[in-house]
Length: 160
Length: 213
Image: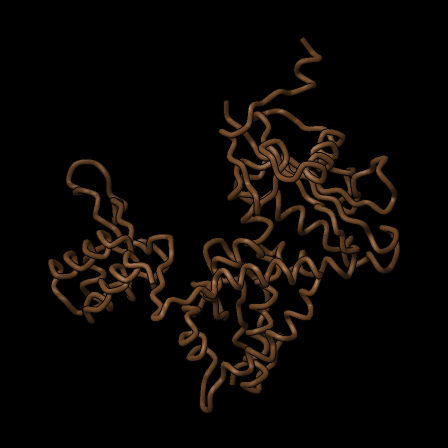
């Protein structure tokens, strides 16, 4: 089965998303999202709405910003995050977000064509925080290949 | 010191072979035997000999590619082409291991949230790169960045901090930007000429040429 890489990252905003403090971040969203979508190996991202500045709405707290996307490979995601114009944006993160002591980013493998849910991503992040990196929830630094994971989708089981 | 690494590095001892290696790596793409022979000013067979020795040593990778657009009968066999192999080799006498130290310190700085402080320290270190009468490209070349020009910018083909940059890209790229801006400062140039502008397989910093006099 061809596997894709899902990544969730979360960030605690220093101020409300519509505040002047976050304005330069919100202004950068459209170009940065378009850059992601144009990156070879990009598959999918969770959108907050039709407008470029719409951030993802969720029930995990108003100060929490979520980024959730799917990629064909580690290289594709890496090249977008660290080897593109995204790096300059990322370097300014402290202007907009608080430092987090716990891991704020997690990845895991999914079958091609499967659209992951945000709740699933939050569970994976919890798991990474609880157990450290495993084939089911890992990071760039402690990476696992898709061959090391057995795919057991709870959702697919339930549909049978 | 690793004996294997010494063997690889020793392959570059021959000055002609070194010129062949330098030419291939300076292109940032696959190059054929004819092109290397012409650039270095040697016979095609000698170029082929040195190129294949470099492949044998693991310093270059080889492949086959059609160098012309023509296909079908009469277009000839695909040509053997060469590019730099991934991996890095170092020889230090006596044995030194700054890489492990760099990785440990990088993780410590990150865990303390000290990225900005690291960038400030890097600025001072970068200022020390410049010698009298130096020009920017000359310093960058000497420091191993492999600078080249493209569309009015100086880009850097090689990341001298590759291993820590793979493990701690945000921190190491910020430190590198600090080094480059410190260097500009010491050369009396506008520090904003250097910015983060990475590409796959290259260094993260580029320089605009507008501020150079």
